[in-house]
Length: 305
Image 1: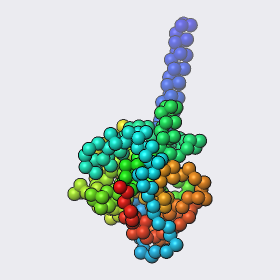
Image 2 (image 1 turned 45 degrees about the vertical axis):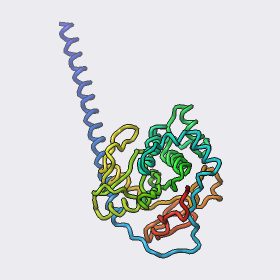
Image 3 (image 1 turned 180 degrees about the vertical axis):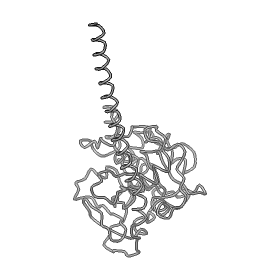
């Protein structure tokens, strides 16, 4: 009788505990679904927000600085070229294959870690990459783009790292990519070392940042390279372009002077230029604001050797 009573009590306890566990599981599932719905709802609003932004204009402020690109024979860039053996990295293919080879090389050198700004490391490719290798840590997208920018400049490709930002000043997430000037195509092209990504239209023509933004706003086809990935996780155009970059292409900014260790100088010594849609001025620190995309995306006056 005692054993039977103990068994009934044990069954009751285990049943009760099972109900508690099931209840907790249901609550967790409900909470997760609510978070996902909010996330999906927020993500779904990014593209319409971009599409509702005001356009640009052709007004030009003559006080705006010129964009400059450090020549590849600069001693620091020569050191970068030899230190990373970039002559071997680029290969003997055509210009576009060399541009892509440098991107893939940077993408595979160090993993991406958006939570590691490397604040105490000098902002040049050698210091940043050496530190990450030594400490076995990743670097954020800004440092990846800064490093790749020095690779391109060292190999004679005019390039910039471009900060792509959202409309929401409370959104602390942004993304930094590169633009590289292709002499063969006579245009800038989109290069993203974090995602090993470049973008084309339906005719497989490579696009630049402004063309991607225009196509997002006007619902035109965009093609992401098949091997685009984040730390070896495959990416899709639907997420990368129509969600993530749709959020981060509301406005953009970059330094006027593209060079080795471009952000090692004090903040007062740097000249940042931002391109904003009309009626919007951006946020954070600022030097110059323009609504003129022709000025912002101008072809380099002097192409490096």
